[in-house]
Image (tube, rainbow, N blue to C red; front, side):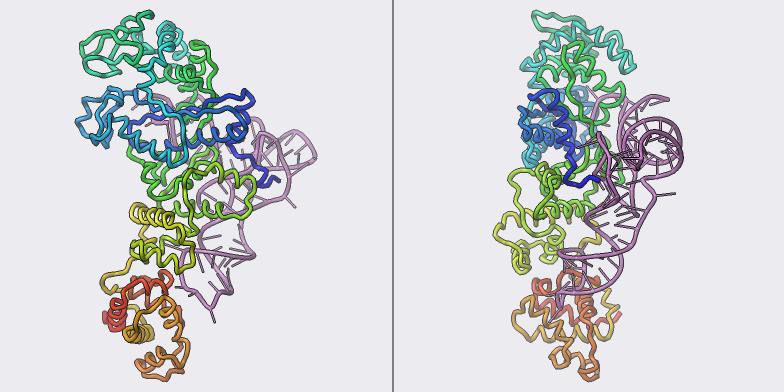
Length: 533
RNA sequence: GGGCUCGUAGCUCAGUCAGGCAGAGCGUCUGGCUUUUAACCAGACGGCCUAGGGUUCAAAUCCCUACGAGCCCGCCA
């Protein structure tokens, strides 16, 4: 049987296969910024980054590029868009106005947060924007070849995909100078020397555009053209492109027969499923954006989500309670003293940059945060008291912020507790003994000055001692001798939680009580002891 | 219809490429921490590796066939 230590990580397996073909590689990824770039999209770049790192680790000469498909047309008015976008449907994304008005274009609006997220994830590809590549003439040679070999390409598309392109089909789509749309034009001629293309548009306009930015290749030709123009040798892509007769299949043939280039090594990856709602999709609105997730967990955990699973397996992702297990698992892995080679590799590949760590488990912070009511000063005091390392306050702040966001955005109701502003109705269930305890507890607290967590704690436990002040008070209230008081501290703690939170359990009582106002506790415990339903 | 992937403990999944004792985490249960928890520590329970056939000294792993699940085949990763 194989041990974990013997398992080779999938990224290394891919890297080895790729290296068998040569030492110099370009890993490429591409995403269309047509909407919020989500966790699902993240799989593409993390997968690529893992293979890129693996190649570098093996001494290969490797590069990593990300192409934002900013020249793709806006497909439709997505549910999250204003109706006014109807007039922009068909225009390249880089020419569509920004939804918030703060960015240069529609594509930049969605690209910017994604690029920031990449940075935080420790992913640093060379970023290209498709519209700029076209305008710089990077595609021009490919456009000429494609125009000349139009019939050959049409034949490949027909044979491989089974769909016959129409008579007016052309691998190049000009952008109409009148209406600005890219999917409404028909090519009527071209001039290789002048590097221009003639067209007519359904808006009744006609004209001539430059091959350098006047339009773009249709997707199935754009992709292989890009491979050739940039020298792509490795590319991960979603399974939509991997279908029989899909764009990878046609791309392989177009690359070879039209551009004389061998298609890159394919890495097909599966979708990330969101809870029970199915695959994530920008257009259906089933989306968890990367930016949102980065508010909630450290980037390394997000990388880990993808790194630990082979690309061809689908990933179930649920940002509510199951996310805690993911974080837990990662923290556990991270704190192993002597990790095996496989664990080590997972950690290396999950590693982002500039991330700080605390020794406070995420789950514990959930309790601390709520006990402190989100107040960072209180959080720090609790953390210190709990014996954690407090030297790196910035990291603790980061963790606390993550936890706060998670509680607000994704936490299930049962994970939350709050100090009730009025006496909870659950106080009705308190026993006589519990009421006597709360009354005595309230009285003794009111007589004392400042109390530490330990003071509170010891006071509760003093109910086990017959000669304690607390036991005496309780005995008197119940009209019995102190030797007859048999208080189980568990029951007493329940009474405390019931009175304050309206539930049977809660955070460690000592520091929890010391984090609340003493006067409030005196009043609350007294009321609870007297409560009559 | 064509194609891809998956099926291993109650749950989430490693392990399958390269055959060699059936694994982890979570959950559950028990005990501990003279501190109660969704914290921490120790332990236990838990399996016809979807089914059937084949290859092999040896199969969760390789091959074939079913069945089940999900997805892709409009430029949505």
